[in-house]
Image 1 (cartoon, rainbow, N blue to C red):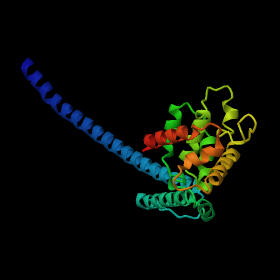
Image 2: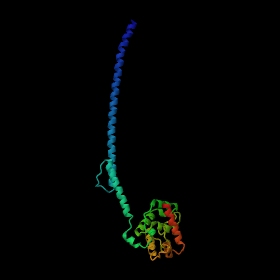
Image 3: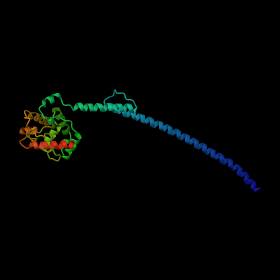
Image 4: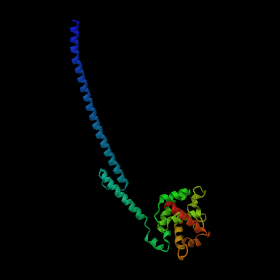
Amino acid sequence: MVIKFMKKKEKSFIPLVVIFILVLQLINLSTTEQRQNITNENTKLIGSDIKSINTLSITYRVRNSNTLNTELSKHNSDYNSYSIEKSQQKYKNLYHNNQVSEDAINQTMHLPDWFKYKVIDETLLKSYLANKSSLLKDEPYFSSIIEVSRDFNINPILLFAITGQEQSFVPQNHVSAAKIANNPYNVFCSWQSYNTNIVDASEIACRTIINLSKDRPDSVDPLVWINRKYSADQNWHYGVRSLYNEIINFIN
């Protein structure tokens, strides 16, 4: 009797276990579907956010490039075309800005070619000046010398070489560096007697080079000819030429 009772219990227990397992599988399936739905929704939200960010980024760039009337697509290909166009315009402007005026060309026809304005590697020139601990590598000095040299069709390297001969490129640690940098060419005798600003001093230096170069015999070196009136030091031209060649070798 005991054996029969146990068998009945065993038979009634098995269906319950099967039902329990089926219920667990249904619950697990339902949970998986919910997770998948949540993942899909998050993916849609993230995609939407990325599109919004791209749109905002393009809008910001357009506004900051002063082209509010330019219509840009959200597609990257259109934005790349826009970027290329802006880059081409930038270098076109750069080329135009580096052009010497016709008047300046006419005023300097008597100068040797290496005295005339050249587009130079400004980054390397600044590195050279940094090696000299020169204040002239900083603004407003550096850009002022470059721009004035272009306006007068004078080689900027020649101007910097003169500042090197006259004031050792104006060392930053000099007690009067800020004043010397106003007139590093010592035009009108010296920076002490004529303390102006870098633009005015550079313009005077350019005019001096142009005027003192007139009527030079072909057999006389250009720097030697200028040396007659630019400096009382008869060896001035040696120093300027040496520094000029040093800068040329460095940036080339």
